[in-house]
Image 1 (spheres, rainbow, N blue to C red):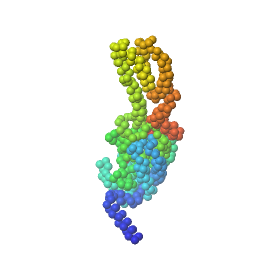
Image 2: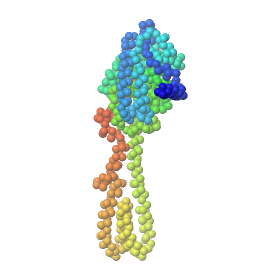
Image 3: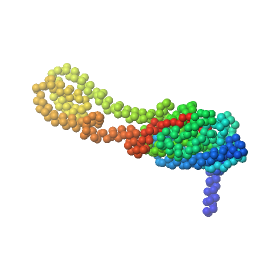
Image 4: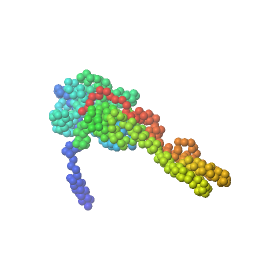
Length: 487
């Protein structure tokens, strides 16, 4: 019986596998472990690496894997996707999830120490072999980029499709021997992103900022097909700035934050390198309570102009909406358009026609009844009281012993005026009602605090986090000048 159950389970599993979506051949091949090599210059290979360069590459691989672990640790903090830092580099929770970003750093962790080879001939058309090479200074590419990748069968720039997988490092890509901890320490101390890079010269003499090796490798791995789960969907290219991607390649810090559409940030390799660096130097940028401004659901819909900073726009939107509601307080508009005030004014001249007979009999009964009626709700139309007093003073001035009830009327006035003041107090909150206004004010105070999360966030989070979040309210400041590309 047990055997039959096992057999049935096997058949069902096989059937599901057959009926399910077939895996692309590239994915099936990459179930085998990727093997890494580095080309030596011992036999005069065109892109062979010296002993020092090989040692630097090996150290850089180990460093990149450690930096990937730092990034993953930060990404695993619950609700970190609501932080300002995550929004600036990956477009916020509406456009990216931490697990999606973690996946890209898991690719980096597939790196392994390469063995040294004198030729790449043995790896032609092998999608599970990746070789590091060192581009000589005489190569035109040496002055254009810090590194670039060649993938088997993936033609770029009109050139023939490569037959080997390569990660090609140029002199500027190899020019900075600092570790990520050293680079991050300088950034933490100064707060200036350029201090995390080394100023040097490209082979053509141009001054450039040279990144540390781990920064370069995290970027380049996002291009390497052999390290992807499925290259068809996992392969990234370098995104370009502009709403339609019509601008420059987004490699600078301000470009990756403010000049890419939010939906494309998670597909730009350079965003991962900057994230990893700041995850080490300023992890508070990605703390859940590092939240100043509004949530980012509007994303790129709000940012219509690339010249305006994202956070500045969001603040304007949030401040405009809650303030517009109390300013346009409809209860204020209602008493202004209070038609009951206009009606007695119109009826007054009509009452002038029956001068002596009719008003004498009617006002005796009506003012007594109307006065209390008007006194209770009609604290709003103040003109109602002078209207009733005017006819009383004109005609039944002496005849009305009702002046005595008028003395009683004060009893009605304090009863009507002072307690009724509680009602206008709800409408006129900024005025003086200290006692009666206590009930209405708390509700509005809560609305104001929820409308301005910057104040509440700053009040509750840690001082270091608050100070840091205030600094990146409009974007992580600074930029790296003359940073060469990564292909």
